[in-house]
Amino acid sequence: MSEDILKLSPLQLDALREIGNVGAGNAATALSQIINHKIDMTVPEVSILPLGDVPEVVGGPDAMVAGVYLRVFGPAPGSILFLLPRDSAFCLVDMLMGRKQGDTQLLNSMDESALMEIGNILAGAYLNALSYFTKLTLLPSIPALAIDMAGAILSVILIQLGQMGDHALVIETEFTTDNDGVKGHFFLIPDPGSLGTILAAIGVKE
Amino acid sequence: MAELIKVGMADYKVGRSPDSLISYGLGSCVGIALFDPIAKIGGLAHIMLPDSTQARSADNPAKFADTALPLMLNEIIKLGAVKSRVTAKIAGGAQMFTFTNTTDIMRVGERNAEAVRFVLKKLEIKLMAEDTGGNYGRTVELKLDNGIFRVKTIDKGEKEL
Image (cartoon, rainbow over all chains, first blue to last red; front, side):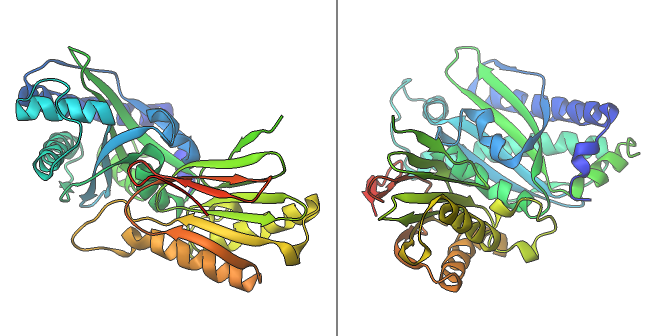
């Protein structure tokens, strides 16, 4: 049971990628409207990785990042993580607060709230798409923010998965703004039991 | 040439002087350094969870405090360390995110550190120093030529245990 994710069929992986595509597309649209810059996003990668390899996706476990973390509640619980390199987070705060690029070097509590609110909006947009596909009601928790090493931030999610197995299924989308100022990653990491629920809901459970 | 040996999440490595062992970006995980100062042999573990008996999947013993430590101790003894001289230093066990209703899973850092102390006691290994808790990540490095355990953070500086 715990390693079921290693046995996903190509069809099931495609279905998950398509959900990621629409979810991340929604979220990217929301973000581009807020900051008034075009956002380019990559086709989502659906990866099944050994737990220890997940931090490599964002530049290694000691890369300095800002992470907005939300739990997903409902019939298919999981985690959403919006991860940006620290400089990108500062750049995003400059845009949100109407400051000159490069002004933000430290976040005050208002800046932190703004980043968490962005996480909230992105997660909401993402989950809307997921709910639409699956007809499951999925709701985000209040967001939490940390600015630290990528490994340390990801450990929170990986530890939860670690109780069930040694691999994580990660639906990951990279995005960049048209001026290259902000780049980041959306991660949707379903709890191990949720994957079957999602696949059944979209009709590709085998 | 001294080598810097990388220890990933849910793994452990052993070595001898003049090499060093390093593990990057510990959050709620705990880094455990074991060291024999005479033989200059030691090991570094990066555990994720306190207890293998509570987990659904326990395929990787390096993931858990209760299974990783005895295995790593055995390996450094095989390299020539003497158990009565081996001491421990630990770091990590942070709570990276604060939510208003703190669930058990959020307290896992604290539970990891507790479990490590308990297992060390059971193995009769003296805990010399620790830097645990807080809400920030740590990179830890064990220098096998002198047993110094260096703990680096992003905003709280660097210390040697």
